[in-house]
Length: 328
View 1 (cartoon, rainbow, N blue to C red):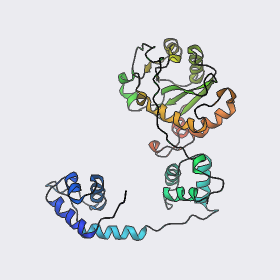
View 2: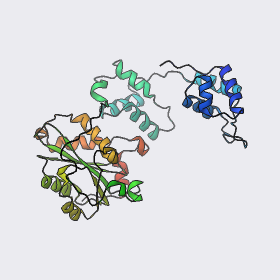
View 3: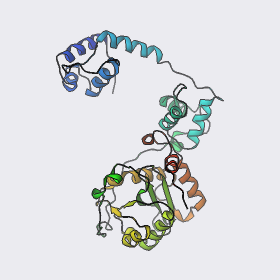
View 4: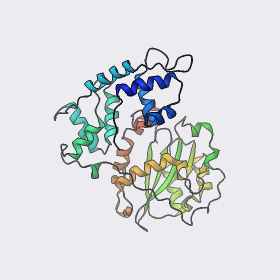
């Protein structure tokens, strides 16, 4: 798709249509533009020193002012080379070495050094693709999203839960506290073990453990070991048969257990997303019987120290322990 910038004549016509009180969608049809393009143009170029709209619900938009702002931004938009052996260069190398995405690297830089010039996401991608960063390739260091296949096996509907995720109270739903966990299992090669994963909803902090089979007792005991000494407010699980001993587990952790409705994995989106990060290191078909506890701990620590956009570019580790949590 080819994109073009607004011309002065288009901005003049846009000002006229806004004065007539037309909606962004109607204006987009007239100008043959996307409604989101119209919205960005108006919001970007309205005066910051007065309300976006006049009392008559019309916008403070002037085509000459918008054109001058556009010209100024274009002059300031000059590609900036990042030289080796500088603070920016070392920060990018460290981030990529920890498998951070370019967006994560740029966001974390801005959080840590707000007075410095921002890093450009496109520049980092370009440096990787052109080979300017030594021993770094996009295929091996950046997560790729594939087509999701929803598993619909006979193990669903084997659990008759006491509570389901739509019954969450406000504290769980709004992520108001540490201690509300989502849980699932990550499979590898058939018959070669799997991982139990638990993720705190507020901080996105991840706990993992290796189990040898999809056995309900082994799964329950693994979760009890993980959560020993951890303040647990609630636990939300998948409908797999490995969680069939949930009543015994509920008594052991002293917190209510909720279940996702069948074939609705998005109800536990935090856990599903984190499992996607794990899949980068342990792809489908992985033999978990060969995985050591030390290797799993290193990967888990790497994920817990990865800054997240939803956390204001803080890491799950920083958020989890900033709440005064002490693990036994």
